[in-house]
Length: 390
Image (cartoon, rainbow, N blue to C red):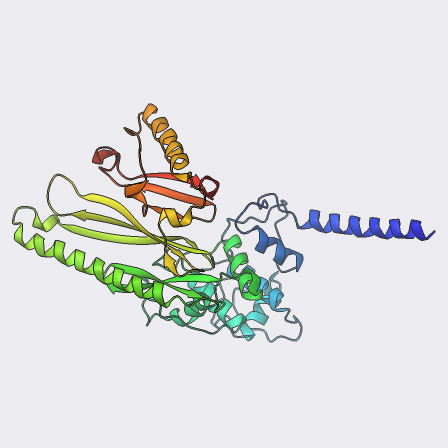
């Protein structure tokens, strides 16, 4: 009888878990999706609910009403005895009336004549209600390309960055008017609710001059001091300003085409964690002649050992050079056969030790125009697995 009881108990637990897993599964959110952990975490808590079609509808914009409901569930606030906020477009018969009333009376949403429950939630609105709902604090000296310090949403966005909840829409832009998808809101909410989902390292932009930005980094856990690296990027920003000034000064001396001189530069952060931080800049220069010049330059930082790395520093296999060269040539010749480029073959990595950047899944070697063929072939990038070198 005891053995039968144990088996029966095991089956009950197994079937219960299987039912829970099946109930929480969304056909449009596979385990490989970037938001899967956060979506299923919140679903198991009852914070998120999918559609009747068995999907989470991850790419659909989250509405203001849905956002209110999600945050109220996440905070486990009671839905009884809440004053009517009096919105003309949210009658008591509205399916999210109680959640909206709770969220408004909590101070997360502003009171007005209308709530606009079906309106698509904007990124700046997400920042406000998330910061308010979870009482987030903290600051970093961020300078967004598309949002000034005086902008009303800045005090709400900054705590999200300081706490590892967002690093922005791009490296230098927050995109305050951008629409938040259901998957994105799930990630933001999970990060605000549970620190284990937050980014341990965040990047934020600083302005060197009009149109020129450089990255700064913060360890949200406090284990690493990024002063050395951040100071270096300050100097990079100043150097970029000097380059543009030199080009624009030259433009004054060119009476024929000086008005067309340009210098543009932007950057992205393909990897930033407690192991490595990788930054890649893309520049474009026109200083006379038949055409301008577009190029990449990058910096890769070893967080644990506090230094900027070359490819040799990243690699651990003694014979990695020839393996990487063979893989790049294989891809290059393949593109040549398809008529896309004219790859003549790579023979050495000696002059390209710093021409790479890192992602979470591999590294990318890049070659600027003229380094392998005519300018018309533009920048060429080769994505490679870490297993080739480590």
